[in-house]
Amino acid sequence: MDRKHFEKRVSESKEYKNLLIKLENIVGNYCYNGNIQNYGPGGSWEGEGRWFRYPITLRSGDWKYKRNYLSNDIHPTELATGSYVFGANQLSIIGALADIIEYLEKHHDLKI
Image 1 (tube, rainbow, N blue to C red):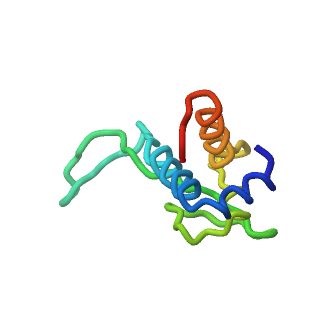
Image 2 (cartoon, rainbow, N blue to C red):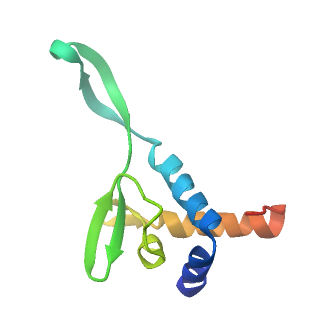
Image 3 (cartoon, rainbow, N blue to C red):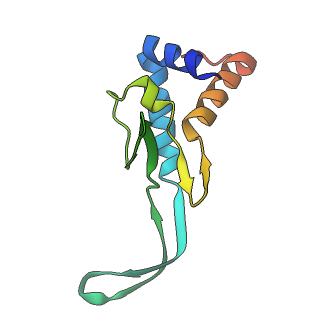
């Protein structure tokens, strides 16, 4: 989905915008690192590995910032830039979710 179409759709539909935000939150909470060492209260060993919320990176003009959540008041232009940054790589999670929603609407009668 191109950016202008995306921004128009997000601006015109609160339900669509809220769905994107909710889906991103679900995906972002599915990160796991098996190498994290877990110590509980008093330094007790609780095993290896931990689930965590992966931060989403957004852009506003030339400025980049990270969030652990997206609020409903985010501007469509900034929302469209949402990605997960993995070193030199990035996953445009908001664009991917928008394309998935569009696919489901066209091929599986999803109604938002």
